[in-house]
Image (cartoon, rainbow, N blue to C red; front, top):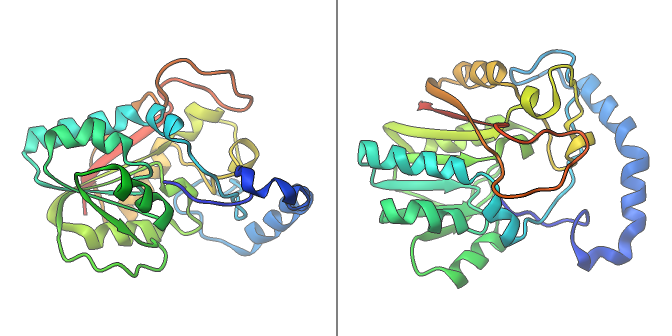
Length: 255
C-alpha cells in the first residue's frame, strides 16, 4: 500500500518544521488519545497504540523485497483450490501481484489509493485496478471473489474493523481470506507494549499471533491456518527496535 505524506517524501523537504512539531507533540497527544479510546481490537490492555501514524511512500524496489513469502503462500492457495477471482486490498505497486499471482490467476483486481492505482494502470497490461478508500469506500465492485488478500495493511489503520468489513464485502460466500501483518512478539520482543510508532511511525498497532487470531475470530472469521513467514527478502541493514526473520504472520480463513 502506498500513501503520501510529509514523512518520507522529498517534495516536502521544505517543511522540516512539520517533522519537528510531529516529534514534539506526538507522544503527548497519543497518550491522551489512548486514554479516551478503550477499544483494543484484541491487543493486550497495556498496549499503547499510535493514533498519529505518519504517511509514507514505498519505493518499487522496497515493495519487491517485503512480503514476497506472503504472496507465494497466496499463489499456493490459489493453485490448491483452483481459485479464479483474486483481489488484493492494498496492492501498492502491484509488483508482487505480477511476479507471484499473475502466473496462477487470470482474474486479478488490485485496490489501493489513486496514486498507487495510477502507477499500476500505467505499468501493467493485466488485471483490474481500482482506486478506493477502505474507511470510506466509494468504488462499486459487483464481483465477489474467491480469494480476498490484504498484505500488511491492517497495522496502518486507525480502525481495523474498516478493513474487516471491506473484505467481507468483497468475499463470495465461502470465499477464502488471507491477511498478513507483523507479529509483534517476534518483531519487537514479548515485553513490547507500544506505541508501534516508536519503532515504525507508519504503524498504528501490531498484534501477536494469539491476539490477531482472537480479534479476527471475534469479527466472524473462521481461522483455518496461521503461520509465520520471512518478512523481507535479500540482505538488509540492522534496524534498531526490530528483528528480522519469520516476523510476518499470515492468517488464512473464511468469513
